[in-house]
Amino acid sequence: MKALETRELPLTDYQHVSAEELFARTTAAKRALGDNVLVLGHNYQRDEVIEHADLRGDSLMLSKLAAQHAERPNIIFCGVHFMAETADILSRSQQTVILPDLAAGCSMADMAAIEQVEQCWETLGRILPVEDTVMPAVYVNSAAVLKAFCGEHGGITCTSSNARAVIEWGWARREKILFFPDEHLGRNTANKMGIPRDQMIVWDPYMPNGGNTVEAIKRARLILWKGHCSVHQMFQPAHVDYFRKQYPDGKVIVHPECHENVVNKADLVGSTEFIIQTVSAAPSGTIWAVGTELNLVNRLKRTQADKRIFFLSSTVCQCATMFRIDAPHLCWAMENLAEGHVVNRIVVPDDEKAWAKIALDRMMAVS
Image (cartoon, rainbow, N blue to C red; front, side, top):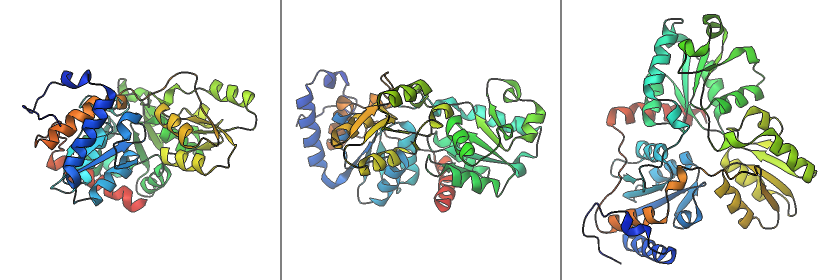
């Protein structure tokens, strides 16, 4: 294995290395590190990265598993920034979390900046006794500082699979819920619960009062932040209609981050893990259209070859920020670590970490 001379070895030294050599060098570095490293691979990762993962899954599952492996002092999280933050929040104090590319963020998470959320809270406070009537609930696909905001204000986090339980928990304690940053997950969950549309409003952080009248704010039970996932937003009702025309006996399964017009047409709706488990357990010969990230769907096609699996959209829908984690970045981070250098460490400040963990713990208690 090539010895590294500096901590900040230019990534360009890796970008022109062949795929075969990158695989061999990453494998050698991982072998040299042994039990000193745990590689986590999110389900949406490209194959050249996830093949090196010790554990695969969704973001929260991986973070919880990392905390359970306290004997592994270094965690290389092949995902995006908020996932690595959550791993740092839940990990043991002696564990170090590394993100191979700091540019791997999340467009949805970026749609709710802490300054905007604080301004929203202040605005609501001029209309309502906000601390007593509004429960902040943040999707785990969000920055640590937003999780900390919820923890400090009595709020909670949620996942795509426990959003209903979290919303019920919030309404049992306060009259209204401020749900952010993904409006579709909140709306689809509320629709399934039978919540009338006039009890939901959308908060646009770029408009006065979020684009709502004072009366609408007072009437609303669910305040949905104007945000979305760029991947799941791509799926359209026409995609479902086209698939059903081609394959009348096929099933459509989609993620709840999709628009309600797509969700309402689907046969099944659920988290990434739900999609994987459902399609994997389906009878041989069944036909599926899957509405979620392309890398995951292509992996299902290969591993479930006894079924006919299609990507719901005719347009390529990869998670562009997740896609930033590639073989060169992973090799660079792994070889640095093998040489005793930590690159791209993710550290959540202690005060943020404490409040964020409270919000996460509340969710885990509910779940």
